[in-house]
Length: 173
Length: 178
Image 1: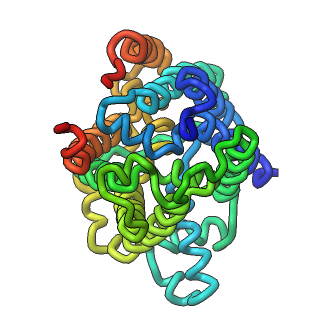
Image 2 (image 1 turned 90 degrees about the horizontal axis):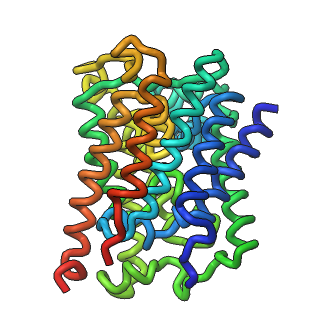
């Protein structure tokens, strides 16, 4: 049952990314070159809707939250490496799967590169695990740090994202 | 246009947000990059079980799922299936004249498929190395993580766009100058 549920949610996820153009090299690079804001706005819209829904669910204890630990040094280094890969490949770890489904062979190679990258990480993990323990503040969120209910942050945060999407971010061709 | 999205960012983003809420209610928030480790584990465990089991990082993910597929792995397979169906249904399947080559890439770097493949592979290596160090990627860390207002996910999101924007500007400097 869990396996079928995974397949169903994944199918919807893949179809939404494909239909929304998130598996397109041109759309992704357009965002990174700050010319075509569609993909950035797509992500912000998903977060703006998701954050309010998740913390509304949490209010009635129905959200299966999964908070990742915050280790500042390791996460910033990881993000900087990831960003280079993002721009060089023109895909991310999920969109390269969807782009592969569209028959794009470069995206299939990115999936293979990803398998290699994850394997390299597994090999060097014992040597660099210190990056995960240093400056590690654990599973901390803005509401948990402030000691307030999630919706108090989620609703104004979502409102800020709507202003960003509709008033601030503009295509620049 | 072959690469124009079928639905707008507003609709796609809102649907993605609703799907994230549904997934969080039913199972857990959406994530992808862990499954690259799971896949590596499955492959290595079938080829050389001793090496796989002795690797601390692979065995952390392998043991949990008994070195076999689970919910998260099926989700990634679902992405491929769902992406194929929607691409075929909307005539976005195999629309490139050269399947390895985004036309935008060739205007900057030329028509060499091996060169494009090298970029695609190295990019993939960096993506997953970074994602595993962070503990998630665009979906699990950025979309799911920021939606849960996780402080580290905000840091990750800012870092990937800062680095991605700088790298893109260096790669496409000729195009930007003209």
